[in-house]
Image 1 (cartoon, helix red, strand yellow):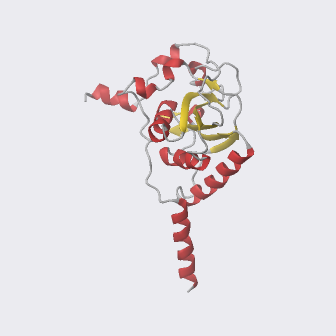
Image 2 (cartoon, rainbow, N blue to C red):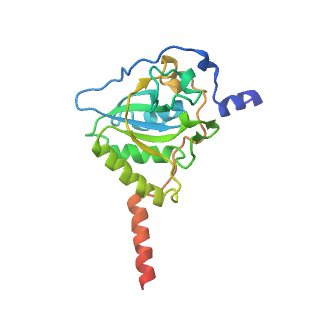
Image 3 (cartoon, rainbow, N blue to C red):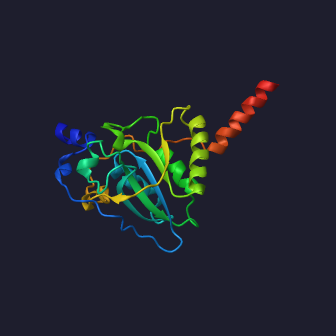
Length: 217
């Protein structure tokens, strides 16, 4: 691999941001009974790719990358990239709750990126790359907050910076961003997007309880 090709792998290309196509509302596949979830964890190319590789055919119906959490209408990649619209790059997914639970998705989210970096993943810096969970109902909020508290304690030593917010208006990203890694096999993927080999939360809590009992004796 040449030095130039190495740099292309490490630094996200920005040439596409010159386009000004207005982002459409989502056309995601959503069969009867499907539920939705939205996660932001840095560059949406790698986030979508991680979820699709791990769960497609195992409960996930479809994914779309896009923009959420902002304060302007009709965001585009170009405007979101300025960091001034308030939007986060995110992945919207639909899933079968009989095959895949929201808890599994949240735990995977915390394993596949670095939630301790404020407004940054790898070399991608800005509020559009923030770590966030956007919930659709009270049940999702309760699961997200409860798991985040436990994960913060047992996996990340109380350093999590992830936001947990209601899902507002969603905007699909431009077509050339959708399933980007499928179209570009050697395309950029943030180096922080990989699975961390954490113990299960139950195992962590069991170890903690045993340690407490040991100190009592």
